[in-house]
Image (cartoon, rainbow, N blue to C red; front, side, top):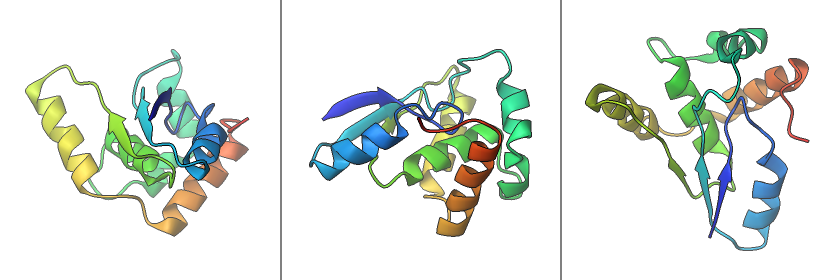
Length: 118
């Protein structure tokens, strides 16, 4: 089992996760919605991800579902600051993975916006 930082706006581990999973390792991800940069909202907008969210789905919920959709991810550690935030995170994870076409389109949009998996 390995633990790595990974999320839609922090994709540096994306290919390593796939390689590790291919080698039979379990992957725990963290930092899924952490704001590693001051321009978090700008990055989300630049990638056009708002258009891919389901009705009423928050940006954080979308990012949780995006990260959990990666086929190599076993589980995620999602931080919280309040009971309400915890409830939202549970609802997001319970909503399940993104549809395949939405996941592919999100990755394409992130790539186009320069938020790439090196």
